Length: 487
Image 1: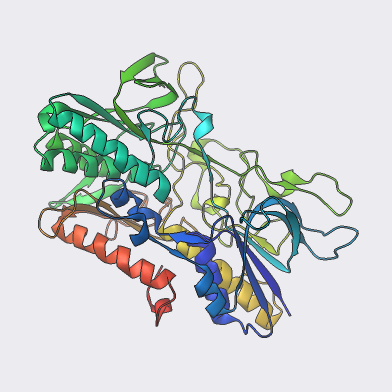
Image 2: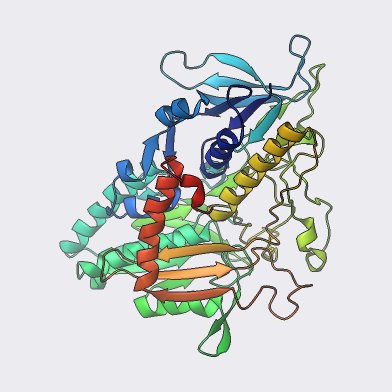
């Protein structure tokens, strides 16, 4: 009997659990999912909650009935520390977790495993930026459905002020010098702008994009070249055109350092310390690991074997420091397997990238200001499935060879950024890149396959965004033939 433990029930963790239960005989093997909350949320739709077009109930559901049906044990708890060699009492690896439910909140237990999937995702590191506290004053977030609900409440109050003739400044973007998820902020600013214009309040609003990107359209992946009108364009022009068309201004190459009630303080690559007034701010925080500790059988701290300095888990990547010009797709992991303990995996945002995809930039004051590598959404789902497939094969054959692989240097990804809501008035920017990490050896001219890397705006993309919302929730709920829907 194999005992598989999955930490986290987000896109990577829940996907892995779904395929594990499908591929293994649950009478012979045990699957346990551990997560601080019993709720699954389709995070991409937080954007629509943040502008009042969907409610939290429309983007989330309780996992417990589904896991009971699937024969998966669910434990509502937070992971605390890792013991990959066990201890004097437990011979197999185990994790120490702390209950997060009402009945026994705070109580700690040890959960043993034969295979461990760490899909805990990132710590939303709001505290890394002074004053960046969602719900505090005029600061909003769309990182969780709870944050997004508050964002809509705050946005409504600003819309009311504009109706009464009071001008408001909206600043949306990244809230840390090395933040990622520019795409989520990009989508949110377009939806906020849509709601303002729909009400005819644009004369009372100033909408500003603030970002750590060197150029707009970088999105943490170094930008991309795209075919357009018979020519090769790029995502810089693609993103700028969206903003120019909507009269949205921008501040780029900015590392936000601090916020107070009405001012954003930031540093730019020229080393200048500048200020931007605001009445409404939604800034994506930096991401970090959760601060987990790891110990060997004797109790010695071996956290550096499992985790990189940023707290994210080490996997089968090349972490050797090297100049930017020497980075290649070969540095990126393929199986998300820890090199020291091969029965531990970390798909999704939980794994430590070997380096950024965008070129690292440092201000004249020595502050790193650049976009970190994105790993959310489609890539996380693919990684979760590949991890499950490899564990299933290992259990069934006894062969530890990782035959299933999913390098970000070989996988493509699609992103649909909505810009409004409605059957006729909504639009979306549909973008695909292949591969996510540029492969300059295979595609020396553009870094990616120019035939499958594209960017197109239009109403059809908005309909597709709607379809994806319902399709991926259908899949996550394990409804009939869910596995036929690709990641």
